[in-house]
Length: 186
Image (cartoon, rainbow, N blue to C red; front, side):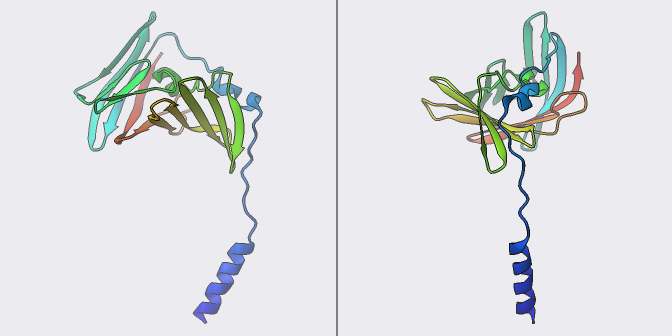
């Protein structure tokens, strides 16, 4: 009896209609992430979390001067172009403020779809950058050094109603580090 019931349940699920996610590659649908306004002057307070450790963090830009401070972190540093972790530095797919405020596209991307996800890829002689969208929202960004093969993936959390991503996770060989945004002053 149990075997018959199990067979009926499996038959029911195998015949159920599959849910297909809409996947569109029209660049105008994603232009919001190309034209996002980023304030000229800002101060962003947050926490960098690595395992059980948390480090207070400040990212600020005033009159063209860029400041990043990570308190007490020996193995972690970040600047406009690079994220360094455990003695290895990775190029960022975009400056930290672009990642936080969502300016993720530059206008030269090639769009394509795979299994309901939309990919926006740019490639030059040295790097390949791919932004992945699910239901028109950015999900992750990866950047790969074509020469060394070293790559970094940036996972984007939910976007706040104030126009910034409150959680950004950096995934690289050797570990994962989260940047949790607590406050943005403009």
